[in-house]
Image (cartoon, rainbow, N blue to C red; front, side, top):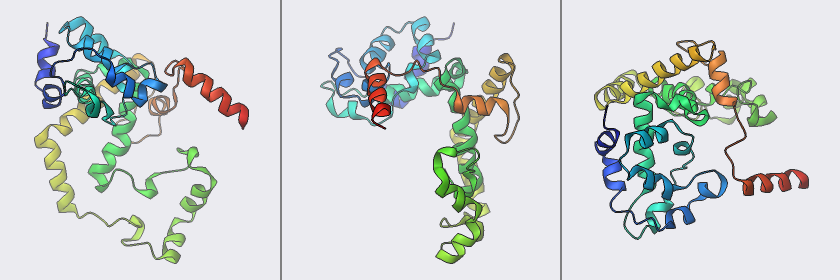
Length: 249
């Protein structure tokens, strides 16, 4: 059986993020995510320190490692110099490499991030480009964005924001730079990780009996991962806060 702790130790973020935890709980006390989600960074570090493969494997399959917002508040307060947020980074990467991320609702959303931000970086050189945010897929943007999207070319022309045609306020990244960027992804293992996410997601879609396409976003599995919400992620305190907010509206 593969030693998962040894795999984690190969990640510099894990090596630098976990020195000598004494389980004081300060990281949990300062953590914004711990207030809203069923998430306890102190407990995550405690579980990892067992070096037990079965326990670590369950972490890799869990919702837990996807709740961290990467704010690194934990780093600023730990009396022993630990950074649970960096431990989480290492756990997430290993979960993606081994395909365990598909076993949790929040983990499966990694596929959506890869197909949006990930593909945009390699295709356009940007995480987000305006003409890629279709209001049909992003109704949360509201009617103002829907109007802008529909009349984007005219709006950019009138506002003087078109630097390179439909690129809008962002400059067009030349093909040679994009090729260099793709080479960097190949050499550093980024493309291999992308491929692992795609492969595991396609397998999971098959297990769930859902349509999966090699490209694009208009298919059943993609729509599922971006919209699924079991409602079991938030703490009771956050549930009450939301009820009060809705009542005040």
